[in-house]
Length: 143
Image 1 (cartoon, rainbow, N blue to C red):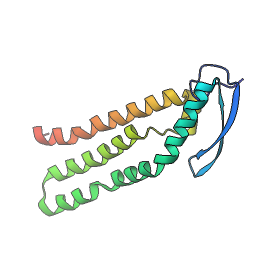
Image 2 (image 1 turned 90 degrees about the vertical axis):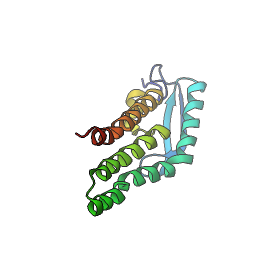
Image 3 (image 1 turned 180 degrees about the vertical axis):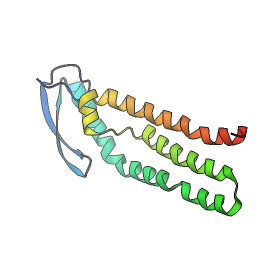
């Protein structure tokens, strides 16, 4: 007896396939849901993933390398503010990407259900966003 991929509460009764992103690329992914409402939610989320996965990757990529200009400025001006801003930009952009596009791993989706996985992923994004502010605050107060 498998549980619903969306709500993770009820026994899954409806089996269906959706052509969506599966981690490596798009393919037909099998899902099981408990109701037509959950099935519709899963299909809508898969559509959202298909439409926005490249935006997600671009934001993560930009976030991963956003510290580079600040490191160059730090080396030129020897001002620690640029180091703090580089860390803030990196963590902030990745946090924003995760908040806007709460895409979690297939394993997380199957263990928590899509609804909870999206909530947990967004919470992680908000935590990253808050943490991203800390380096600038420490710089401003002189730590």
